[in-house]
Length: 349
Image 1 (cartoon, one colour):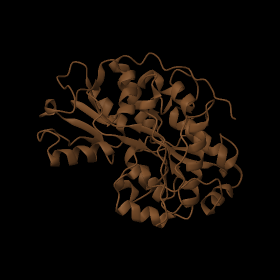
Image 2 (cartoon, rainbow, N blue to C red):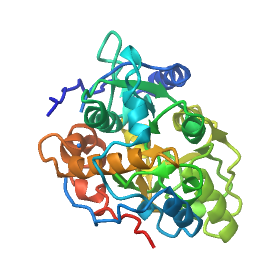
Image 3 (cartoon, one colour):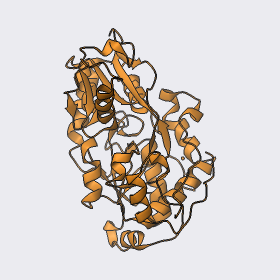
Image 4 (cartoon, rainbow, N blue to C red):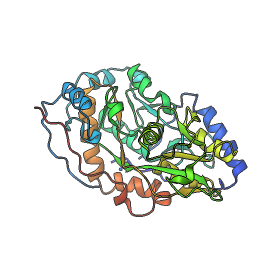
């Protein structure tokens, strides 16, 4: 088992001015293609799916989607055409190409206190290294590509990346465009606002307030639908959308918006970075993060699902260990609230 690298904790991000500078730099860095390797994870076995189920089953299930987190293929350790193509890359190009974030604190980020060329680290990065180790035999055989929120699906469809591991929620709309692994994390949409704000949660205190979301995010589609259905006050202003979710935090710090809606797991990390903001109210959805891949990459989807089974079972260097290292400081010691249920897979009809 590859040894876990201990990281220096991120400190000194308390001031609003400092955070605005760091966030702005992070947004600029996100336009680059980072290439730094780094390292890294428990319970629950699979509900055995039919190994004969294929992308065709995924496509039909997506059209009739009611539980998107269950629309994935059963695990398998076998290679196939997609994995063979990855393994056939020569020399320095023989790497897994993965779309990630590099400015989500404790998920995929560079610690500015680590000095020099800070390596990418965090919960998502641990999972990427685990996948690379299984597929290519080397946890560092990864080419990271920083992609903004609204480019996750295009990057997969255009073949710029083999997969995206970037706090990406599995939902029915996205299943029309990409394939997902089984869930690896449970979260929900939540509000982030200044501590001094009169906003108390996802309720009528959002009347006439400007809310920032990332373009193409689950947050934006949820708010639009909720306003249409009357679950969100009609006067809430949803016009502010940004390419990267962290841009919303910068706008909040500058007073350009009143609140941010994003996944609670990300919002908690942002609140930890800036003591002037806080989570307001409880999560108002239940969602799951998954690894996204091309729709016809059946063998890679199955392989990732097999890796996730082992990642959750590994009590030494797996899901629980990664949670404790990266997320317990922001989400609390009770990891059970964030661990997804035992996976379920498509069965051939």
